[in-house]
Amino acid sequence: MFSWFENRLDPYPADAPRMPPEGLWRFILHFSRGAWGYMLAMSACSALIAIFEVILFGYLGELVDRLAKTEPSQFWQVEGSRLLLMAAILVIGLPVTQLVSSLLMHQTLMGNLPQRIRWQAHRYLLRQSMTYFQDEFAGRIATKLMQTALAVRDVAMKFVDVLVYIGVYFLGALVLAASTDGWLAVPFFLWGALYGLLLWWLIPRIGAVSQAQADARAVMTGRVVDSYTNISTVKLFSHSSREESYVRDSMDGFLVTVHRMMRLASIQNILLTTLNSLLTFAVTALGVWLWTAGRVEVGAVAVAIPLALRLGNMSHWIMWEFAGLFENIGTVRDGIGSLALPRMVTDMPGAQPLTVTAGSVEFRDVTFRYGGEGEGKGTAVLDHLSLAIRPGERIGLVGRSGAGKSTLVNLLLRFHDLGSGAILIDGQDISQVTQESLRAAIGVVTQDTSLLHRSIRDNISYGRPEATEAEILRASELAEASDFVGALGDSKGRRGLDAHVGERGVKLSGGQRQRIAIARVLLKDAPILVLDEATSALDSEVEAAIQGQLELLMQGKTVIAIAHRLSTIARMDRLVVMDRGRIVEQGSHEALLERGGIYAGLWARQSGGFLECDEIAPEGEFPLEPAAQLP
Image 1: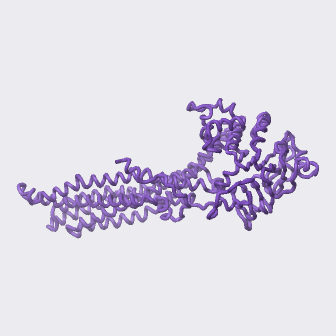
Image 2 (image 1 turned 45 degrees about the vertical axis):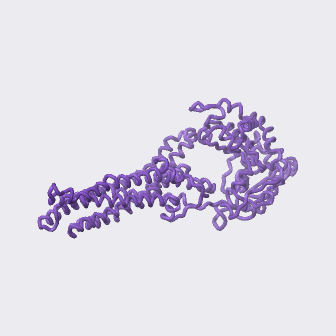
Image 3 (image 1 turned 90 degrees about the vertical axis):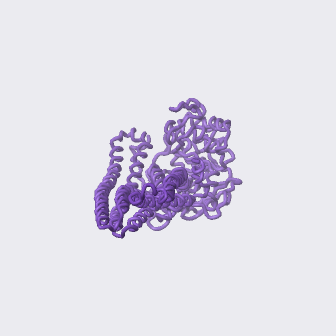
Protein backbone atom coordinates (compact mmCIF):
# COMPACT_ATOMS: atom_id res chain seq x y z
CA MET A 1 0.00 0.00 0.00
CA PHE A 2 2.74 2.46 0.97
CA SER A 3 4.79 1.63 -2.13
CA TRP A 4 1.78 2.08 -4.42
CA PHE A 5 1.16 5.61 -3.16
CA GLU A 6 4.91 6.41 -3.12
CA ASN A 7 5.15 5.52 -6.81
CA ARG A 8 2.23 7.69 -7.95
CA LEU A 9 4.31 10.86 -8.49
CA ASP A 10 7.57 10.64 -10.45
CA PRO A 11 10.26 12.58 -8.53
CA TYR A 12 12.47 12.77 -11.63
CA PRO A 13 10.38 13.93 -14.61
CA ALA A 14 12.12 13.60 -17.96
CA ASP A 15 10.75 16.84 -19.45
CA ALA A 16 13.40 19.23 -20.73
CA PRO A 17 14.06 21.90 -18.06
CA ARG A 18 12.47 25.25 -18.84
CA MET A 19 12.98 28.69 -17.35
CA PRO A 20 10.59 29.11 -14.40
CA PRO A 21 8.17 32.06 -14.68
CA GLU A 22 8.80 35.05 -12.41
CA GLY A 23 5.27 35.51 -11.02
CA LEU A 24 4.65 33.87 -7.63
CA TRP A 25 1.68 31.69 -8.54
CA ARG A 26 2.93 30.93 -12.03
CA PHE A 27 6.24 29.88 -10.45
CA ILE A 28 4.43 27.57 -8.02
CA LEU A 29 2.22 26.12 -10.76
CA HIS A 30 5.29 25.56 -12.95
CA PHE A 31 7.03 23.43 -10.34
CA SER A 32 3.94 21.62 -9.05
CA ARG A 33 2.59 20.58 -12.44
CA GLY A 34 1.95 16.86 -12.52
CA ALA A 35 1.02 16.83 -8.83
CA TRP A 36 -2.23 18.79 -8.86
CA GLY A 37 -4.46 15.76 -9.32
CA TYR A 38 -3.13 14.23 -6.10
CA MET A 39 -3.33 17.57 -4.26
CA LEU A 40 -6.96 18.06 -5.28
CA ALA A 41 -7.76 14.52 -4.11
CA MET A 42 -6.12 15.36 -0.77
CA SER A 43 -8.14 18.60 -0.67
CA ALA A 44 -11.38 16.66 -1.17
CA CYS A 45 -10.41 14.37 1.72
CA SER A 46 -9.73 17.41 3.95
CA ALA A 47 -13.13 18.90 3.10
CA LEU A 48 -14.83 15.58 3.86
CA ILE A 49 -13.01 15.26 7.19
CA ALA A 50 -14.16 18.77 8.19
CA ILE A 51 -17.76 17.93 7.20
CA PHE A 52 -17.65 14.69 9.20
CA GLU A 53 -16.35 16.52 12.29
CA VAL A 54 -19.05 19.22 12.09
CA ILE A 55 -21.77 16.56 11.59
CA LEU A 56 -20.53 14.67 14.64
CA PHE A 57 -20.42 17.87 16.70
CA GLY A 58 -23.98 18.72 15.64
CA TYR A 59 -25.24 15.25 16.43
CA LEU A 60 -23.68 15.47 19.89
CA GLY A 61 -26.19 18.21 20.83
CA GLU A 62 -29.08 16.24 19.40
CA LEU A 63 -27.94 13.15 21.30
CA VAL A 64 -27.90 15.08 24.58
CA ASP A 65 -31.47 16.24 23.93
CA ARG A 66 -32.60 12.70 22.99
CA LEU A 67 -31.07 11.26 26.15
CA ALA A 68 -32.85 13.88 28.24
CA LYS A 69 -36.27 13.42 26.62
CA THR A 70 -36.47 9.74 25.60
CA GLU A 71 -37.26 6.81 27.87
CA PRO A 72 -34.33 4.36 28.05
CA SER A 73 -36.58 1.51 26.92
CA GLN A 74 -37.51 3.41 23.73
CA PHE A 75 -34.11 4.98 23.00
CA TRP A 76 -32.82 2.40 20.48
CA GLN A 77 -36.15 2.29 18.69
CA VAL A 78 -36.23 6.07 18.32
CA GLU A 79 -32.52 6.81 17.81
CA GLY A 80 -30.90 3.50 16.82
CA SER A 81 -30.60 4.05 13.04
CA ARG A 82 -29.14 7.57 13.36
CA LEU A 83 -26.80 6.46 16.10
CA LEU A 84 -25.49 3.63 13.93
CA LEU A 85 -25.01 6.06 11.02
CA MET A 86 -22.99 8.40 13.21
CA ALA A 87 -21.03 5.43 14.55
CA ALA A 88 -20.22 4.40 10.96
CA ILE A 89 -19.02 7.93 10.19
CA LEU A 90 -16.92 7.97 13.36
CA VAL A 91 -15.47 4.46 13.17
CA ILE A 92 -15.27 3.90 9.40
CA GLY A 93 -15.81 7.08 7.38
CA LEU A 94 -13.47 9.38 9.31
CA PRO A 95 -10.55 6.91 9.70
CA VAL A 96 -10.72 5.75 6.05
CA THR A 97 -10.84 9.32 4.75
CA GLN A 98 -7.98 10.26 7.07
CA LEU A 99 -6.04 7.21 5.86
CA VAL A 100 -6.39 8.20 2.19
CA SER A 101 -5.56 11.83 3.00
CA SER A 102 -2.48 10.79 4.98
CA LEU A 103 -1.25 8.43 2.26
CA LEU A 104 -1.65 11.12 -0.40
CA MET A 105 0.07 13.71 1.80
CA HIS A 106 2.95 11.73 3.27
CA GLN A 107 3.61 9.00 0.73
CA THR A 108 2.73 10.68 -2.57
CA LEU A 109 3.49 14.37 -2.03
CA MET A 110 5.64 15.25 0.99
CA GLY A 111 8.77 13.48 -0.27
CA ASN A 112 8.26 13.28 -4.02
CA LEU A 113 7.09 16.83 -4.71
CA PRO A 114 10.11 18.73 -3.29
CA GLN A 115 12.43 16.18 -4.88
CA ARG A 116 10.67 16.79 -8.18
CA ILE A 117 11.13 20.55 -7.73
CA ARG A 118 14.82 20.16 -6.81
CA TRP A 119 15.38 17.93 -9.83
CA GLN A 120 13.75 20.35 -12.28
CA ALA A 121 15.46 23.42 -10.81
CA HIS A 122 18.86 21.71 -10.58
CA ARG A 123 18.70 20.62 -14.22
CA TYR A 124 17.86 24.17 -15.23
CA LEU A 125 20.68 25.63 -13.12
CA LEU A 126 23.22 23.17 -14.52
CA ARG A 127 22.55 24.73 -17.90
CA GLN A 128 22.85 28.29 -16.63
CA SER A 129 25.50 30.51 -18.11
CA MET A 130 28.99 30.69 -16.59
CA THR A 131 28.35 34.32 -15.65
CA TYR A 132 25.54 33.24 -13.34
CA PHE A 133 27.87 31.07 -11.24
CA GLN A 134 30.65 33.65 -11.31
CA ASP A 135 28.33 36.23 -9.74
CA GLU A 136 26.96 34.02 -6.91
CA PHE A 137 28.19 32.00 -3.94
CA ALA A 138 27.82 28.29 -4.73
CA GLY A 139 26.54 27.75 -1.18
CA ARG A 140 23.97 30.51 -1.60
CA ILE A 141 22.64 28.98 -4.82
CA ALA A 142 22.42 25.54 -3.21
CA THR A 143 20.61 26.96 -0.16
CA LYS A 144 18.08 28.79 -2.33
CA LEU A 145 17.47 25.62 -4.35
CA MET A 146 16.83 23.50 -1.26
CA GLN A 147 14.70 25.94 0.74
CA THR A 148 12.66 27.07 -2.28
CA ALA A 149 11.75 23.46 -3.12
CA LEU A 150 10.33 22.91 0.36
CA ALA A 151 8.59 26.30 0.36
CA VAL A 152 6.86 25.67 -3.00
CA ARG A 153 5.62 22.31 -1.70
CA ASP A 154 4.29 23.80 1.53
CA VAL A 155 2.54 26.73 -0.18
CA ALA A 156 0.82 24.48 -2.71
CA MET A 157 -0.22 21.86 -0.16
CA LYS A 158 -1.42 24.37 2.45
CA PHE A 159 -3.67 26.04 -0.08
CA VAL A 160 -5.34 22.84 -1.21
CA ASP A 161 -5.37 21.08 2.14
CA VAL A 162 -5.26 23.33 5.21
CA LEU A 163 -7.21 26.28 3.80
CA VAL A 164 -9.96 24.01 2.48
CA TYR A 165 -10.24 22.24 5.83
CA ILE A 166 -10.32 25.55 7.75
CA GLY A 167 -12.87 27.12 5.41
CA VAL A 168 -15.25 24.15 5.44
CA TYR A 169 -14.92 23.71 9.22
CA PHE A 170 -15.58 27.38 10.02
CA LEU A 171 -18.57 27.63 7.69
CA GLY A 172 -19.92 24.39 9.12
CA ALA A 173 -19.52 25.77 12.66
CA LEU A 174 -21.47 28.94 11.72
CA VAL A 175 -24.27 26.93 10.14
CA LEU A 176 -24.39 24.59 13.13
CA ALA A 177 -24.55 27.43 15.65
CA ALA A 178 -27.17 29.34 13.62
CA SER A 179 -29.35 26.25 13.13
CA THR A 180 -30.47 26.36 16.78
CA ASP A 181 -30.67 30.15 17.20
CA GLY A 182 -29.30 32.89 15.01
CA TRP A 183 -27.98 34.78 18.02
CA LEU A 184 -25.75 31.86 18.95
CA ALA A 185 -23.86 32.30 15.68
CA VAL A 186 -23.08 35.99 16.41
CA PRO A 187 -20.04 35.37 18.69
CA PHE A 188 -18.59 32.98 16.12
CA PHE A 189 -19.17 35.50 13.33
CA LEU A 190 -17.59 38.36 15.32
CA TRP A 191 -14.69 36.12 16.30
CA GLY A 192 -14.17 35.18 12.65
CA ALA A 193 -14.19 38.86 11.62
CA LEU A 194 -11.68 39.88 14.31
CA TYR A 195 -9.58 36.82 13.57
CA GLY A 196 -9.56 37.79 9.89
CA LEU A 197 -8.43 41.34 10.78
CA LEU A 198 -5.63 39.90 12.91
CA LEU A 199 -4.54 37.73 10.00
CA TRP A 200 -4.79 40.69 7.61
CA TRP A 201 -2.51 42.77 9.83
CA LEU A 202 -0.08 40.08 10.93
CA ILE A 203 0.47 37.72 8.01
CA PRO A 204 1.87 40.21 5.42
CA ARG A 205 4.39 41.34 8.03
CA ILE A 206 5.41 37.75 8.65
CA GLY A 207 5.75 37.26 4.89
CA ALA A 208 7.98 40.32 4.51
CA VAL A 209 10.19 39.28 7.43
CA SER A 210 10.33 35.73 6.06
CA GLN A 211 11.53 36.92 2.66
CA ALA A 212 14.26 38.97 4.30
CA GLN A 213 15.10 36.00 6.54
CA ALA A 214 15.39 33.59 3.60
CA ASP A 215 17.81 35.93 1.84
CA ALA A 216 19.79 36.51 5.04
CA ARG A 217 19.98 32.74 5.63
CA ALA A 218 21.25 32.17 2.09
CA VAL A 219 23.89 34.90 2.47
CA MET A 220 25.00 33.47 5.82
CA THR A 221 25.26 29.95 4.38
CA GLY A 222 27.09 31.25 1.31
CA ARG A 223 29.70 33.00 3.44
CA VAL A 224 30.22 29.97 5.66
CA VAL A 225 30.64 27.69 2.63
CA ASP A 226 32.98 30.22 1.02
CA SER A 227 35.23 30.15 4.10
CA TYR A 228 35.29 26.35 4.17
CA THR A 229 35.88 26.06 0.42
CA ASN A 230 38.89 28.38 0.65
CA ILE A 231 40.15 27.12 4.02
CA SER A 232 43.73 26.76 2.76
CA THR A 233 43.80 30.45 1.79
CA VAL A 234 42.32 31.40 5.17
CA LYS A 235 45.02 29.48 7.01
CA LEU A 236 47.88 30.59 4.74
CA PHE A 237 47.09 34.23 5.46
CA SER A 238 46.23 33.64 9.14
CA HIS A 239 42.81 35.19 8.67
CA SER A 240 40.65 33.03 10.94
CA SER A 241 39.65 36.12 12.92
CA ARG A 242 38.85 38.04 9.76
CA GLU A 243 36.68 35.19 8.50
CA GLU A 244 34.92 35.09 11.86
CA SER A 245 34.05 38.75 11.44
CA TYR A 246 33.00 38.23 7.83
CA VAL A 247 30.60 35.42 8.81
CA ARG A 248 29.56 37.16 12.07
CA ASP A 249 28.32 40.11 10.02
CA SER A 250 25.99 37.85 8.01
CA MET A 251 24.92 36.01 11.17
CA ASP A 252 24.03 39.34 12.78
CA GLY A 253 21.92 40.20 9.76
CA PHE A 254 20.13 36.85 10.01
CA LEU A 255 19.60 37.25 13.76
CA VAL A 256 17.90 40.62 13.21
CA THR A 257 15.27 38.90 11.05
CA VAL A 258 14.86 36.14 13.67
CA HIS A 259 14.18 38.72 16.40
CA ARG A 260 11.65 40.48 14.17
CA MET A 261 9.90 37.16 13.53
CA MET A 262 9.81 36.26 17.22
CA ARG A 263 8.32 39.65 18.13
CA LEU A 264 5.51 39.01 15.68
CA ALA A 265 5.04 35.53 17.19
CA SER A 266 4.65 37.00 20.69
CA ILE A 267 2.13 39.61 19.47
CA GLN A 268 0.22 36.84 17.74
CA ASN A 269 0.02 34.65 20.85
CA ILE A 270 -1.08 37.49 23.15
CA LEU A 271 -3.82 38.79 20.83
CA LEU A 272 -5.04 35.36 19.86
CA THR A 273 -5.32 34.09 23.45
CA THR A 274 -7.33 37.20 24.34
CA LEU A 275 -9.61 36.74 21.34
CA ASN A 276 -10.23 33.05 22.09
CA SER A 277 -11.02 33.77 25.74
CA LEU A 278 -13.58 36.36 24.68
CA LEU A 279 -15.15 33.87 22.25
CA THR A 280 -15.55 31.15 24.91
CA PHE A 281 -16.93 33.67 27.42
CA ALA A 282 -19.40 35.16 24.93
CA VAL A 283 -20.67 31.79 23.68
CA THR A 284 -21.08 30.44 27.22
CA ALA A 285 -22.85 33.56 28.50
CA LEU A 286 -25.11 33.84 25.47
CA GLY A 287 -25.90 30.10 25.45
CA VAL A 288 -26.86 30.09 29.13
CA TRP A 289 -29.02 33.21 28.66
CA LEU A 290 -30.80 31.71 25.65
CA TRP A 291 -31.38 28.46 27.56
CA THR A 292 -32.79 30.28 30.60
CA ALA A 293 -35.06 32.19 28.24
CA GLY A 294 -36.27 28.89 26.77
CA ARG A 295 -35.05 29.72 23.27
CA VAL A 296 -32.58 26.82 22.90
CA GLU A 297 -32.32 23.30 24.21
CA VAL A 298 -29.55 22.20 26.53
CA GLY A 299 -28.04 20.20 23.63
CA ALA A 300 -27.37 23.42 21.69
CA VAL A 301 -25.44 24.84 24.63
CA ALA A 302 -23.62 21.50 25.00
CA VAL A 303 -22.47 21.83 21.38
CA ALA A 304 -21.76 25.57 21.24
CA ILE A 305 -19.36 25.74 24.19
CA PRO A 306 -17.13 22.78 23.10
CA LEU A 307 -17.24 24.17 19.55
CA ALA A 308 -15.94 27.52 20.81
CA LEU A 309 -13.18 25.74 22.76
CA ARG A 310 -12.36 23.66 19.67
CA LEU A 311 -12.11 26.75 17.45
CA GLY A 312 -10.00 28.48 20.09
CA ASN A 313 -7.57 25.58 20.17
CA MET A 314 -7.59 25.35 16.38
CA SER A 315 -7.00 29.09 16.01
CA HIS A 316 -3.39 28.83 17.20
CA TRP A 317 -2.79 26.03 14.72
CA ILE A 318 -4.58 28.01 12.00
CA MET A 319 -2.52 31.11 12.75
CA TRP A 320 0.74 29.17 12.57
CA GLU A 321 -0.42 27.55 9.35
CA PHE A 322 -1.17 30.95 7.87
CA ALA A 323 2.12 32.30 9.21
CA GLY A 324 3.92 29.30 7.76
CA LEU A 325 2.08 29.80 4.47
CA PHE A 326 3.18 33.42 4.12
CA GLU A 327 6.62 32.61 5.46
CA ASN A 328 6.94 30.08 2.66
CA ILE A 329 5.54 32.59 0.19
CA GLY A 330 8.32 34.95 1.26
CA THR A 331 10.87 32.17 0.76
CA VAL A 332 9.46 31.39 -2.70
CA ARG A 333 9.60 35.07 -3.68
CA ASP A 334 13.22 35.18 -2.57
CA GLY A 335 14.00 31.99 -4.50
CA ILE A 336 12.39 33.35 -7.66
CA GLY A 337 15.09 36.03 -7.75
CA SER A 338 17.79 33.36 -8.06
CA LEU A 339 16.07 30.48 -9.86
CA ALA A 340 13.82 32.25 -12.39
CA LEU A 341 16.62 33.95 -14.30
CA PRO A 342 17.07 33.61 -18.06
CA ARG A 343 20.16 31.91 -19.41
CA MET A 344 22.60 34.35 -20.91
CA VAL A 345 23.76 31.77 -23.46
CA THR A 346 21.08 29.56 -25.02
CA ASP A 347 20.83 27.15 -27.92
CA MET A 348 19.17 28.64 -30.96
CA PRO A 349 15.77 27.18 -31.89
CA GLY A 350 16.39 24.11 -34.03
CA ALA A 351 20.11 23.99 -33.15
CA GLN A 352 21.79 20.87 -34.52
CA PRO A 353 24.70 18.87 -33.06
CA LEU A 354 28.14 19.96 -34.21
CA THR A 355 29.77 17.63 -36.73
CA VAL A 356 33.58 17.77 -36.71
CA THR A 357 35.04 16.29 -39.88
CA ALA A 358 38.47 17.95 -40.07
CA GLY A 359 38.83 20.31 -37.10
CA SER A 360 39.32 23.73 -38.69
CA VAL A 361 38.62 26.71 -36.42
CA GLU A 362 38.00 30.26 -37.61
CA PHE A 363 37.49 33.45 -35.61
CA ARG A 364 35.93 35.88 -38.06
CA ASP A 365 36.04 39.61 -37.13
CA VAL A 366 35.26 38.82 -33.47
CA THR A 367 34.51 41.67 -31.04
CA PHE A 368 33.63 41.02 -27.40
CA ARG A 369 33.36 43.00 -24.19
CA TYR A 370 32.21 41.70 -20.81
CA GLY A 371 28.77 42.99 -19.92
CA GLY A 372 27.59 43.16 -23.53
CA GLU A 373 27.64 45.84 -26.16
CA GLY A 374 26.61 49.46 -25.80
CA GLU A 375 27.63 52.64 -24.06
CA GLY A 376 29.38 52.36 -20.72
CA LYS A 377 30.30 48.71 -21.23
CA GLY A 378 34.05 49.26 -21.18
CA THR A 379 36.87 48.57 -23.60
CA ALA A 380 36.53 45.59 -25.90
CA VAL A 381 38.50 42.58 -24.66
CA LEU A 382 38.69 41.33 -28.24
CA ASP A 383 38.56 43.95 -30.96
CA HIS A 384 37.76 42.85 -34.54
CA LEU A 385 39.97 39.80 -34.20
CA SER A 386 40.28 37.34 -37.09
CA LEU A 387 42.20 34.07 -36.94
CA ALA A 388 42.01 30.94 -39.09
CA ILE A 389 43.38 27.66 -37.75
CA ARG A 390 43.85 24.81 -40.22
CA PRO A 391 42.73 21.26 -39.40
CA GLY A 392 45.42 19.57 -37.32
CA GLU A 393 47.39 22.80 -36.87
CA ARG A 394 48.92 23.52 -33.48
CA ILE A 395 49.03 27.15 -32.49
CA GLY A 396 50.33 28.83 -29.37
CA LEU A 397 48.71 32.00 -28.00
CA VAL A 398 51.21 34.43 -26.52
CA GLY A 399 50.65 37.72 -24.76
CA ARG A 400 50.72 39.55 -21.49
CA SER A 401 48.04 38.96 -18.88
CA GLY A 402 44.84 40.64 -20.02
CA ALA A 403 45.67 40.40 -23.73
CA GLY A 404 42.53 38.31 -24.35
CA LYS A 405 43.95 34.78 -24.68
CA SER A 406 41.68 33.05 -22.19
CA THR A 407 38.71 35.08 -23.39
CA LEU A 408 39.34 33.74 -26.89
CA VAL A 409 39.19 30.19 -25.55
CA ASN A 410 36.04 30.91 -23.49
CA LEU A 411 34.33 32.25 -26.59
CA LEU A 412 35.32 29.13 -28.54
CA LEU A 413 33.64 27.10 -25.79
CA ARG A 414 30.69 29.52 -26.00
CA PHE A 415 30.69 30.46 -22.34
CA HIS A 416 29.68 33.90 -23.63
CA ASP A 417 28.01 35.14 -26.79
CA LEU A 418 29.89 37.43 -29.15
CA GLY A 419 29.27 41.12 -29.50
CA SER A 420 29.85 40.80 -33.24
CA GLY A 421 31.54 38.46 -35.67
CA ALA A 422 31.41 34.68 -35.76
CA ILE A 423 33.36 31.60 -34.70
CA LEU A 424 33.23 28.62 -37.03
CA ILE A 425 34.32 24.99 -36.67
CA ASP A 426 34.51 23.18 -39.99
CA GLY A 427 32.39 25.99 -41.42
CA GLN A 428 29.64 25.64 -38.81
CA ASP A 429 28.81 28.74 -36.78
CA ILE A 430 29.05 27.63 -33.15
CA SER A 431 26.10 29.88 -32.23
CA GLN A 432 23.90 27.67 -34.41
CA VAL A 433 24.87 24.30 -32.87
CA THR A 434 24.03 22.79 -29.48
CA GLN A 435 26.34 23.75 -26.62
CA GLU A 436 26.59 20.14 -25.44
CA SER A 437 27.88 18.92 -28.81
CA LEU A 438 30.25 21.89 -29.12
CA ARG A 439 31.95 21.25 -25.77
CA ALA A 440 31.97 17.50 -26.37
CA ALA A 441 34.19 18.18 -29.41
CA ILE A 442 36.75 20.21 -27.43
CA GLY A 443 39.12 18.84 -24.80
CA VAL A 444 40.39 21.39 -22.29
CA VAL A 445 43.15 21.33 -19.68
CA THR A 446 43.14 24.55 -17.66
CA GLN A 447 45.59 26.16 -15.29
CA ASP A 448 43.11 26.10 -12.38
CA THR A 449 42.23 22.42 -12.29
CA SER A 450 39.16 21.59 -10.22
CA LEU A 451 38.30 17.98 -9.51
CA LEU A 452 34.98 16.56 -8.37
CA HIS A 453 34.77 15.23 -4.80
CA ARG A 454 34.58 11.68 -6.11
CA SER A 455 36.99 8.85 -6.77
CA ILE A 456 40.06 9.11 -8.99
CA ARG A 457 38.31 6.70 -11.36
CA ASP A 458 35.22 8.92 -11.58
CA ASN A 459 37.35 12.00 -12.25
CA ILE A 460 39.35 10.38 -15.05
CA SER A 461 36.34 8.68 -16.64
CA TYR A 462 34.48 12.03 -16.60
CA GLY A 463 36.14 12.53 -19.99
CA ARG A 464 34.40 9.40 -21.31
CA PRO A 465 31.98 7.75 -18.84
CA GLU A 466 31.69 4.54 -20.86
CA ALA A 467 35.47 3.93 -20.80
CA THR A 468 36.73 0.54 -19.65
CA GLU A 469 38.98 -0.02 -16.65
CA ALA A 470 41.89 -0.74 -18.99
CA GLU A 471 41.36 2.55 -20.82
CA ILE A 472 41.24 4.47 -17.53
CA LEU A 473 44.48 2.84 -16.37
CA ARG A 474 46.13 3.57 -19.73
CA ALA A 475 45.14 7.26 -19.55
CA SER A 476 46.51 7.43 -16.02
CA GLU A 477 49.83 5.96 -17.18
CA LEU A 478 50.12 8.31 -20.16
CA ALA A 479 49.54 11.30 -17.86
CA GLU A 480 52.32 10.07 -15.52
CA ALA A 481 49.71 9.71 -12.74
CA SER A 482 49.72 5.97 -12.12
CA ASP A 483 52.60 6.04 -9.62
CA PHE A 484 50.96 8.42 -7.13
CA VAL A 485 47.42 7.11 -7.75
CA GLY A 486 48.44 3.65 -6.56
CA ALA A 487 49.61 5.08 -3.23
CA LEU A 488 46.48 7.18 -2.56
CA GLY A 489 44.00 6.37 0.20
CA ASP A 490 41.16 8.15 1.98
CA SER A 491 39.57 8.17 5.44
CA LYS A 492 37.12 5.39 4.51
CA GLY A 493 39.82 2.95 3.48
CA ARG A 494 39.38 3.35 -0.28
CA ARG A 495 42.66 3.12 -2.18
CA GLY A 496 44.06 3.74 -5.64
CA LEU A 497 41.48 4.59 -8.26
CA ASP A 498 38.72 4.26 -5.64
CA ALA A 499 40.19 6.91 -3.31
CA HIS A 500 38.21 10.15 -3.12
CA VAL A 501 40.06 13.41 -3.75
CA GLY A 502 38.16 15.86 -1.50
CA GLU A 503 36.29 19.01 -2.49
CA ARG A 504 37.83 20.48 -5.66
CA GLY A 505 40.59 17.86 -5.32
CA VAL A 506 42.01 19.43 -2.15
CA LYS A 507 43.69 16.17 -1.06
CA LEU A 508 45.99 16.25 -4.09
CA SER A 509 48.84 18.59 -4.89
CA GLY A 510 48.51 21.01 -7.77
CA GLY A 511 50.71 18.84 -9.97
CA GLN A 512 48.71 15.72 -9.13
CA ARG A 513 45.42 17.46 -9.94
CA GLN A 514 46.90 18.63 -13.24
CA ARG A 515 47.94 15.11 -14.21
CA ILE A 516 44.45 13.76 -13.40
CA ALA A 517 43.02 16.52 -15.60
CA ILE A 518 45.38 15.57 -18.43
CA ALA A 519 44.38 11.91 -18.05
CA ARG A 520 40.73 12.97 -18.25
CA VAL A 521 41.30 14.83 -21.53
CA LEU A 522 43.43 11.99 -22.91
CA LEU A 523 40.49 9.67 -22.35
CA LYS A 524 38.02 12.12 -23.89
CA ASP A 525 40.09 12.19 -27.11
CA ALA A 526 38.27 15.18 -28.60
CA PRO A 527 39.28 16.42 -32.09
CA ILE A 528 40.02 19.96 -30.85
CA LEU A 529 42.35 20.45 -27.90
CA VAL A 530 42.81 23.52 -25.71
CA LEU A 531 45.78 23.69 -23.32
CA ASP A 532 45.45 26.72 -21.05
CA GLU A 533 48.66 26.67 -18.96
CA ALA A 534 48.30 22.87 -18.94
CA THR A 535 51.70 22.23 -17.32
CA SER A 536 51.87 25.29 -15.06
CA ALA A 537 51.37 23.25 -11.90
CA LEU A 538 54.02 20.64 -12.79
CA ASP A 539 57.61 20.74 -11.70
CA SER A 540 60.28 20.68 -14.38
CA GLU A 541 61.02 16.95 -13.99
CA VAL A 542 57.38 15.90 -14.31
CA GLU A 543 56.81 18.39 -17.14
CA ALA A 544 59.74 16.93 -19.06
CA ALA A 545 58.37 13.43 -18.48
CA ILE A 546 54.91 14.36 -19.64
CA GLN A 547 55.90 16.35 -22.74
CA GLY A 548 56.04 13.15 -24.75
CA GLN A 549 52.52 12.26 -23.67
CA LEU A 550 51.31 15.76 -24.58
CA GLU A 551 52.82 15.28 -28.02
CA LEU A 552 50.90 12.03 -28.27
CA LEU A 553 47.75 13.77 -27.07
CA MET A 554 48.12 16.47 -29.74
CA GLN A 555 48.65 14.10 -32.67
CA GLY A 556 45.96 14.53 -35.31
CA LYS A 557 44.19 17.27 -33.35
CA THR A 558 43.70 20.97 -33.82
CA VAL A 559 45.47 22.51 -30.83
CA ILE A 560 45.25 25.92 -29.17
CA ALA A 561 47.80 26.26 -26.38
CA ILE A 562 48.27 29.13 -23.95
CA ALA A 563 51.43 29.39 -21.85
CA HIS A 564 53.41 32.10 -20.13
CA ARG A 565 56.36 29.71 -20.15
CA LEU A 566 57.23 30.31 -23.80
CA SER A 567 59.54 27.32 -24.01
CA THR A 568 56.51 25.02 -23.68
CA ILE A 569 54.87 26.34 -26.86
CA ALA A 570 57.92 27.32 -28.93
CA ARG A 571 57.59 24.08 -30.95
CA MET A 572 54.04 24.83 -32.06
CA ASP A 573 53.33 25.15 -35.80
CA ARG A 574 52.44 28.79 -35.38
CA LEU A 575 52.61 31.31 -32.57
CA VAL A 576 49.97 34.03 -32.37
CA VAL A 577 50.93 37.10 -30.35
CA MET A 578 48.04 39.07 -28.84
CA ASP A 579 48.02 42.51 -27.28
CA ARG A 580 44.96 44.43 -26.03
CA GLY A 581 42.50 42.13 -27.78
CA ARG A 582 44.20 42.12 -31.19
CA ILE A 583 46.62 39.88 -33.03
CA VAL A 584 49.82 41.85 -33.49
CA GLU A 585 52.22 39.12 -34.69
CA GLN A 586 52.10 35.54 -35.86
CA GLY A 587 54.53 33.03 -37.26
CA SER A 588 56.94 30.33 -36.15
CA HIS A 589 59.20 30.74 -33.13
CA GLU A 590 62.25 31.34 -35.31
CA ALA A 591 60.46 33.76 -37.64
CA LEU A 592 59.18 35.85 -34.77
CA LEU A 593 62.63 36.01 -33.17
CA GLU A 594 64.10 37.22 -36.45
CA ARG A 595 61.38 39.83 -36.73
CA GLY A 596 62.53 41.41 -33.48
CA GLY A 597 59.04 42.49 -32.40
CA ILE A 598 56.96 41.95 -29.28
CA TYR A 599 57.53 38.18 -29.15
CA ALA A 600 61.29 38.58 -29.43
CA GLY A 601 61.18 41.09 -26.58
CA LEU A 602 59.11 38.74 -24.43
CA TRP A 603 61.48 35.85 -25.14
CA ALA A 604 64.48 37.98 -24.27
CA ARG A 605 62.97 39.16 -21.00
CA GLN A 606 62.08 35.68 -19.77
CA SER A 607 63.75 34.49 -16.60
CA GLY A 608 63.64 30.83 -15.71
CA GLY A 609 61.27 30.21 -18.62
CA PHE A 610 58.48 32.49 -17.33
CA LEU A 611 57.01 35.60 -18.83
CA GLU A 612 57.64 38.68 -16.70
CA CYS A 613 55.26 41.55 -16.23
CA ASP A 614 56.01 44.25 -18.75
CA GLU A 615 56.20 47.95 -18.15
CA ILE A 616 53.10 48.31 -20.31
CA ALA A 617 50.11 46.93 -18.41
CA PRO A 618 46.72 46.21 -19.97
CA GLU A 619 44.11 48.87 -19.42
CA GLY A 620 42.71 48.73 -15.89
CA GLU A 621 45.69 46.80 -14.50
CA PHE A 622 48.77 48.02 -12.67
CA PRO A 623 52.29 46.85 -13.61
CA LEU A 624 54.61 45.54 -10.95
CA GLU A 625 57.35 47.85 -9.87
CA PRO A 626 60.77 46.83 -11.26
CA ALA A 627 61.92 45.76 -7.78
CA ALA A 628 59.02 43.32 -7.59
CA GLN A 629 59.78 41.64 -10.89
CA LEU A 630 61.58 38.37 -11.15
CA PRO A 631 65.37 38.71 -11.42
